Image (cartoon, each protein chain N blue to C red):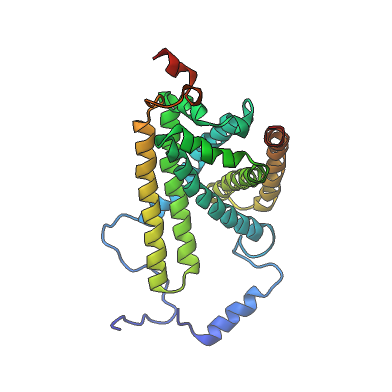
Length: 138
Length: 150
């Protein structure tokens, strides 16, 4: 967008203050939650593509499906699943935070980020031991 | 270039659009509505497949066949398939719009996303609704136990 250069310069100066106004996404919790939301979203999308293809093998034959699904039961893939669940749980809770900010207001967005982290930790504590036992004891 | 230059300091306004659907708005709403539904569907999916019983170690054809012969799980999985792929595809479209700098790269990337989403929705839906839990001529120990009664 071609803008008057003097005007652009003033706008730049205005935003070099320590506390940028009018944006959630510049710096600190607002920015990092946004970055994590994007990274986890992309990771989940690519897993989803693979996961639909592997599940489609049930239509080919029981052997074909079992051969591929047994790859998901190895220790390395088990750790990958832990990472996948970690990404999904963060994306889910931060998605609720985004909805709260959009439909309510952004006053508490910073606190809500730590609520998201807290809920994520609790969910992972509930999930991880059980999953890791399932992966490593078989 | 025939666009007119507006007077300085005139208020910002979008180019007038005549009675079109605001697709970006509906996309924005879709991300939020589908997101909430997907939390229920995916958390349920993960709980049943990874937490109940022996979790990921118990997954095999017989397990999936048992689930997919129940209309409840068929519709659960199809709802998840459609909602998640469109949610993910729209999210990827946003990233392409943000990070792909040329018109041609945006076109290629967004066409690829659309193709992947459409193909996988069709494939997944066909798999769920044409699935045979007891395929003929397969070893009985790989099939769900209810196949023996047939």
